[in-house]
Amino acid sequence: MEQIVECVPNFSEGRDARIIGAIGDAVRNIAGVKLLGVEPDKDYNRTVVTFVGSPEAVVTAAFEATRTAAELIDMRAHHGAHPRLGATDVVPFIPVRGASMDDCVELAKQYARRVGDELHIPVYLYEYAAATPARRNLADVRKGEYEGLAAKLGDPTWLPDFGPAVFNERSGGTIAGARKILIAYNVNLNIADAAAAQEIALRIREIGRPMKDEAGTVMKDEHGAARRIPGTLKAVKAMGVLLERCNIAQVSINLVDYPVTPPHVVFEEVARQARTLGIDVTGSELVGLMPLDALLMAGRHYAARNGGAAALSDRDLCEIAVKELGLSQLEPFIAENKIIEYQL
Image (cartoon, rainbow, N blue to C red; front, side, top):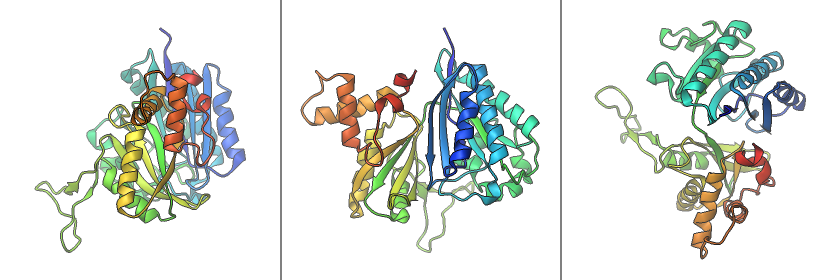
């Protein structure tokens, strides 16, 4: 069986069309790779690129895109709403067809070794490629962001997995790994208050929030770790952000295991939590692509709620899901461009 791997690198540039175009071209020019999407966001100042192909071609495309980003993006001048460690922030490899998670771990290491050796950028491995449990969670590896990277590299417990333990002022650092299919999904609120969106994020995300005493001090367990109040949803990461171009707040969400918690469950829970704060949910946004199954799950849910889904086609179910989730609120949702299976 032919092996197909997906790669979804995130770059710290969402405003300069020349740079974004050059990164896309770096991927497009590699034989054996199909570029599925290039999605910039001006408020996040970040671009998500999605492509698939043979394992060898995908590693080459990821490296060439990283080389281009290193040449064109200067992190010393970068500002944006999304956390980031470097010009090429995170590069995940995802098994799609005929490839295993172990295969993708090896691809992440191949990519990381080349970035470290040739571009002199420190690289950390995360998720299934992580060498230690402390480095599995992306947020933990990214903690301190670009501004704290010099100090991080000086900490013996945070030496990079590949590349020099030297701060690259221009490019920062990169995080590479292997993971399951992740759905980047934002829920839109009818207010422009990032703090309210963050409150909802704290309520729903699996990790929840630190537990505090009456004085506001974080409570610790017997091992010195912060006690936490868990959120309401499993396999969900979330934060609140302000989307200035639309003058709204968003709950920005990563669904790390969508069969456990699919998008429509998140949408309904965000709406429920928002109502307790006197806030309305107005729609949602998909960043990158999603599996067809995730949209069909939403379509079946809403069709059943409205009277039944037995006789509906996949296309009908997708249309119902797009409408109920408000996926076209910010820009038209075109299934042929946003569903992985339709692109392959």
